Image (cartoon, rainbow, N blue to C red; front, side):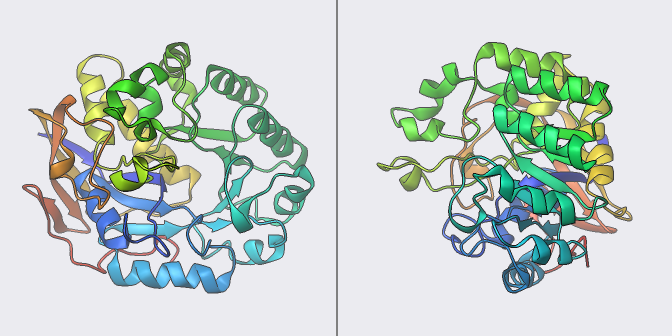
Length: 354
């Protein structure tokens, strides 16, 4: 039996408030525990988005009532909320800046809108970028100009990981994360994922080329964290005329990485470093006392959406054969998951900024 620390996923879309038909704080945290994750940090692009004290409290109140593992809630950077966001830093998991695709109040499609956030948000608090390609380069430039640490979400391209590597070598304060779907899938896998429904392959950033995937593996030492970007949508939505981008991932991340470790592609130490040690440091998280995950390293099985806890009911990794299964999760001395069942009570999770 392999014993791991409680894992941290710094990039989760819980979908509450506003879209609880696909996920909420109860189902997301059940999925997390099933995947060996004892802390999740939730993204702010909900309905309404989390961008002021009232909306932050709305999300935190729902989490307090429902969450079964520990949690934090990001506040979103909007065009005119830099003072408010900075004032909420002690209560928030961090600041999320959408420099590329998003909608409504959190869209920052003009670089003049970035400046006040870089000037005002505390340098000691996490600042996370949704940035791709050229906006990623611009975010690194802002980090250097304002001497402000940044964390870059879901890196997917060769050009991105090489730029981050160069920035680190120059001493720029940048960290980054990579999602399992960008490590294990390329755009050539979309037909296999889709089963005749192309929308099932929609994700942002998009699945990249095999060369991009190879470059991520070749630069594991540049990657600070693994993160799921767990983004559940129902199959009805994914198969519709305007399919929303996003994959569920909380329950498949650890078995995929353990299988890669069994194949010799990375070490167990890498998993601990990128899912516990580094995120704990980057996101200023306290130690969870008496918390660990027990994994049966030799258990082999097929990933099946029918056996998951996420409400969305599907996975792009359906039918994949994996080796390594979470058998038990202990959170603060209490068994939270065992034998395929979530035992932690609703509302027993704690706010990491509480």
